[in-house]
Image (cartoon, rainbow, N blue to C red; front, side):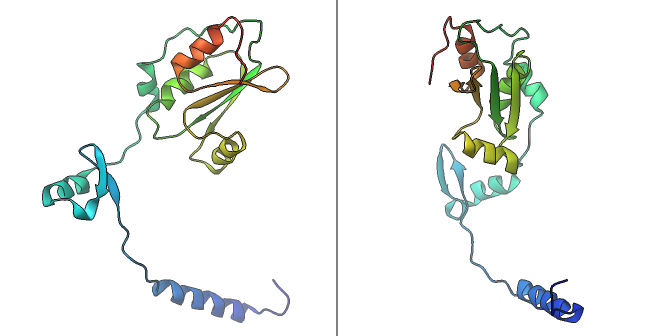
Amino acid sequence: MAKGRTVEAIDREIAECKEELTNVKGRETEVYTRIVGYYRAVKNWNKGKKSEFKQRVCFEPDFAETAKKETETASPAPAAAGAPASFIYFTKKTCPNCPAVKEYVEKLEIKHAGYVVDTAEGLEKAREYNVFAVPTVIFFGADGKELYRAYSVKEIKAKLEAPVAQAV
C-alpha cells in the first residue's frame, strides 16, 4: 500500500470513480458500412436496408476448411542458392486469404514463426517489420537479412521455385 494512504481513502476514490462512470455522457457514433458496392452512413439508409443491416451476423470462418480449397498438399523444396533460411508470417482472424497461406507455409520445412495481428504481440511484430497487409510472409537468408516478401500462395511458390532468390 502507498505511504500515507488508508484503505478508507482508497475506497472513497473507488466510489468516486464508480460514480463518474455512471454519469458518462457521449455523443452518437456514426456507423459507415458497405451498401451496394460503396460506403455510406447507416443513418442515411432507407428502412429496408437498415433492417438488413440489423440482421447481419459477424462470424469467423473455420480456417481449416477454408484453407483446404486453395492449398496443395505438396510444398516445393526451396532452391539451394539464395534459399531462405527462415521466415515469419502474419495473419488475421477475419482475413479470407490468410488460412490458405498459413496452411501452405506451415508445411514448408523451413524454420518459421507465425503471428496473428489481432493480438498485441502480433501487432507489435507487424509494426517492427513494417507489415501493412495480411497475409504477409517475410523470408530471411542465413545471415538474417530479409530476402523478399510474399502475399499469397501463388507468390510464395513463385519465390521459392525461382532459381535465384530476388533481394528486396
